[in-house]
Image (cartoon, rainbow, N blue to C red; front, side, top):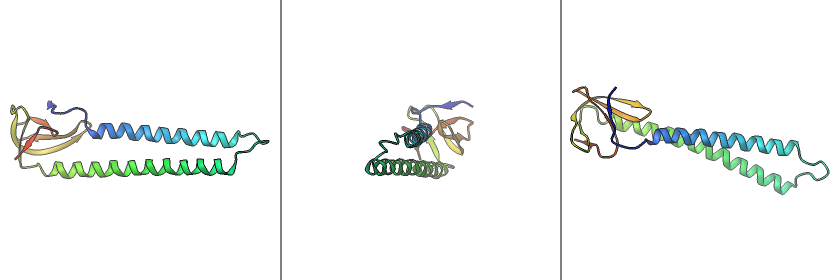
Length: 131
């Protein structure tokens, strides 16, 4: 598939990377917390205030990961709605070299790609004119 690129890597790829990083960080935090609780010195156990602070931090991390997942789903839904809105309309690349009516839109790892009736593919992004 020949795709004319009009922008840098899109948010979908970046959000997938940030989601996996957030999940890895979250998992690492849980492992460290559990290891600390299992291996604490019995003669000097963790103070209740320290324990509560760690549980609060754990809760905040969990809520952040869940919020990020919901925001990613919202962004994906928004991208689909916007992509649907260009079908049947005319798009023109920023340099004006490719222009045509959109017959369909495909969501790829790079973002939304408009398939034109001429057979050209245009990556929807900054600089694209939709009329």
